[in-house]
Length: 270
Length: 339
Image (cartoon, rainbow over all chains, first blue to last red; front, side, top):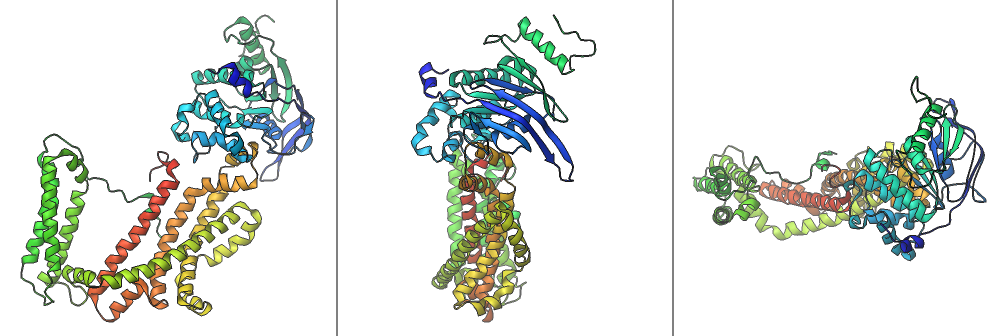
């Protein structure tokens, strides 16, 4: 979709991420304490694509919000590169399941808002065109968000986050609301963006196939309290085949670990 | 203040299938096209009846009807000849016809049948005569009213948005501001007339401040609620884009609260009309409200109705203006919600 030269211009420096002994306790309205995350440690190399997988309530989104700086941990430390994370910043872009486009702005102005928020719109306005081309939305520049399909809206949200050249891109189930076909197409798009730009990506997902298809490593989490149960490395070369025997074997193993394989299921080739 | 005007704009919807254009118009379409002409003929026929009330003979009303008759005949012929004219005119025809019929009915129950007592219910001829005879005075009064109203509305709306943003955004302002708002806000501005007259050096300033107060309350209330209810995820997204507080307030919270702010502005505009008329009646010795009270004192009901007609156009014109502004500012809502 884009030539290599255009992609090179958009290349940014990626950063590593370090999560060390992080816990997060939510205090609910009636005063009860709920441990959302308990002693989580995770190290992500610059340029890596890591998935967080686990059932609801395992603290995946909480961890993402902590890394984004939107919430503060109850204990432990978070670092991006060598710097501690103390609040939200444009170096850590975040894309939610709901695209959360500003409905009062056109597609173009939504993407520009990343630059406007940092007061660099004047100098960097020409970047916006590159990013609209990158996500294939040039012809929708003046459309309002409600006129877009779910997939298009999510592409705008990606472009809006990417226009700031974040060192880390945090994705909170970004494709969760899309239909199966759009989702698979978008997985390829996100992979393409990742490969072109080399940004570190941390992807929260419910979808095991998505995690296997996309990530370098899968971090499996368990709920109550949220903690990391296991980290699985995926060494298959990209582009991966969704129906290859290695893919299916891995999928079976992960389902078994999550106890979703079925009553009498046997993991193949164990 | 009623909120009815907010969800329904001034768009006239055509009754039934009046707008469906066909090559050769059917009997229904012809009837619709001819409706204004028929109605005007009826009104003119009523006007020709012998009068049961003795008033000054006025030639303006019949002249107006005759002009309308001519225009509606031209409109009818054009519609029969040209389909596009029919499509354009058909939705308006029944309303126009009804309006002219209403004039005829008014003429009938006042001048012709003398069912309504004088001087309280003059016929349309007298009111139209007054509109024309006193147009200079009425225009001057409209000008004064417009000045008082626009200054008061602008001040009240600006203060309201300002206070609303503070109260909606900051917990501290909410703590101190809400009680003040809850106690002061519901007092009808008109109840403060004596206080305002005493506090301010000129009647114009006291009138302006009363109108500003009447506008301020709903605008503050609705702005604060709009700001406080901005989706948190919009703010979260903006923060991860590197936004500071100024951007969060001015580029996220306020635009997101705009629909709510406009509801406050509509309510405030309604309140400002009421306050304007009261202020002009009791304090400010000029404007449409003053003219109304003055004409009523002289039992000159022709003038009373004339100024009410002016008010109707004046106020609905201002409402329409605010609707137009809303349509521009909230153009992004088109297709999301029904206005």
